[in-house]
Amino acid sequence: MNVRCRPLSSFPEEFRAARSSGNPFRAGWDDTLYQLKYELEKLGAAEVVIEVALREDEIRLDGWPRSGARPTHPGVVVSFDSRHGPLRYGTDAFPHWQANVRAIALGLEALRKVERYGIGRRGEQYAGWRQLGAGDSELAQRGRELIAEHGGSTAALKATHPDHGGDPEDFRAVQAAREAA
Image 1 (cartoon, rainbow, N blue to C red):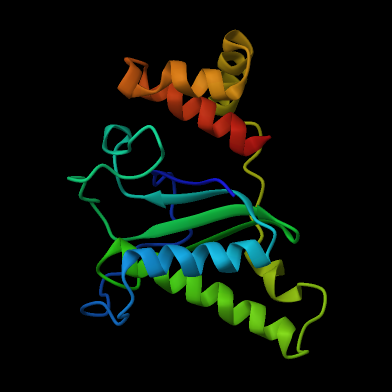
Image 2 (image 1 turned 90 degrees about the vertical axis):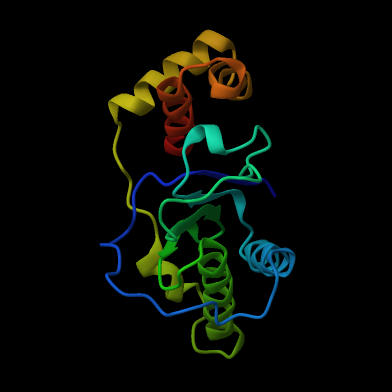
């Protein structure tokens, strides 16, 4: 399963004016990632994106935030393809982005329990969370052109990544095209 971070493109609702204070979870970041990956594996997830309020240059080539990166906002969105279709979950309930990722992981566990306890059998609990198609944006169209020009999405991502001297807007376009595919 491929899990990577990228800049927050959009948030599913308005940001909260007030948040819970502190982090209600005692788990560390490694435990949070383990929990998230475990729940995503149960859903048959692929191509997982954790959107964080960071700039492109604050994300390393491997898709994880640089050590000194500080998000401008704690809200996160986790999106992925699953056996129930594309799903997207976002929250900014807590003041730290890692706590919000933990909240999403625990929320996924709770949704899985609905099926485990016989309340739902065909993934009905995920129906309201399916991603709505964004249509064919100009950004995604430009991304498809760049992918064709570079001979594939991986090559296009490498060629357009700001760490390699690429244009950040071209990099976002390639990412948009991959997500729209």
